[in-house]
Length: 362
Figure 1 (tube, one colour):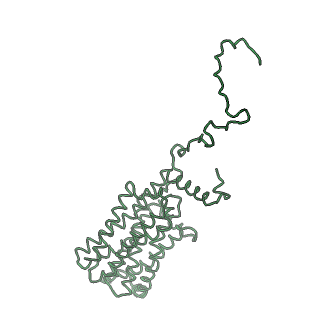
Figure 2 (cartoon, helix red, strand yellow; figure 1 turned 180 degrees about the vertical axis):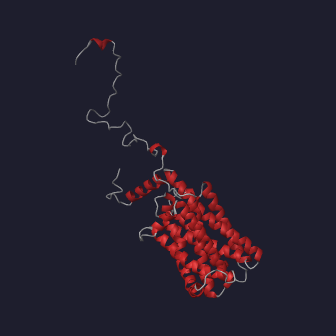
Figure 3 (cartoon, one colour; figure 1 turned 60 degrees about the horizontal axis):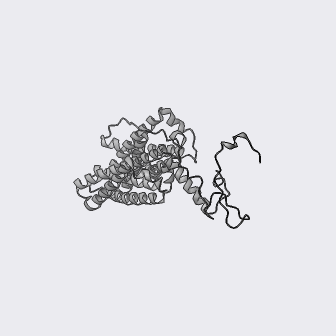
C-alpha cells in the first residue's frame, strides 16, 4: 500500500459488510436479488428517423380514388348488360351498357389526369408483363373498353333513331354488337378485381395486409354499384337481375369486409376504423344493408327502388374511398409498418424458425 499527502483530506470509506457463508461464495453480477435476472435496458419505443414514414406513401390523388369507384361501376354494369343481352331485357341492357360506357370514359379521364400526360397510358400498353398488376390491368381495361364501345355505340345508334353518321359501318356494327357485349361481360370480373390486386401488391401496410380478401371486397362493391345504378335507371319490370345482383353484392361486401378485418393484423386494421376512413366504411355498411333490404323487400315499388339504388351506389363509393384513404393513412404513420413486422418476427421465432435471413437480422 502506498501513501500520499492527500490521504489526510480523503473522506473515510464506509465499513464493508461481512459475507455470509465464508469467502468461497461469490455474488452474482447484477445485484443482490438472488437468482432473478434484472432488466438493465428498458424496452425501446420505436421512433423513425425524424418521425418520417418508413414506407413512402403512393403519390395518388383523388383521381385514383375516383377511378377505383368508376372502374367498379363500369365492370358491374358491363356484366349486367351481358346478362340482360342473354336473357332478352332490352331496356336493362341499354341502360347497363350506357352506364358502363360513361363510367369507363370518366374513369379513363381520371386515370390519364393522374398520369399527367395521355401518352403515359399509351406507354403502359407497349409491353405486357404478367407479374405487374398495373400492366395486366391496363390491358384488361383496354379490352373491356373496346368491346363495350362497340356494344354501346350500337345502343346509341338505336336511341338516336339511327342518326349517327356510321354509313356502311352500321351493318358491321350490327354484326359485332352481340359478340362485343358478351366480350365486355367476359372482361368485367377481372376489371372489377384488378384494382384490389394493384393496391395489395404495394408496400402500404393496410392494403398489403388485406391482400387475401380485398379482391372479394372490390368485386362485391362493383356489384353494389352496378345493381344500384340499374335500379335507378331501369323500370322495375326489367330490374329483377339488378336487384338480385345488388342483394348478392351486399352479402358479399359485408361478409368479405368482416373476414378481411379478422385476418388482418390488429395494428394494420386500425385505419379502417379510425378517422375519415372509419366513418366512410361505417356508413358504407349501413347504406349497403339498408339498400339491400330495400331491394329485396320493396324493389318492385319504383320510389323504394330509386332510394335503395342510390343508397347502394353511395355504399360502393364509400367502400372504395374508405379503403383508399385508410391505406394512405397507414403509410404515413411508421407505427403501422414496424409493429406488425416485429409481431411477425416474434411469431417466427416462437415457431422455432431461427436460422433464416429474417430472424437472424438484428
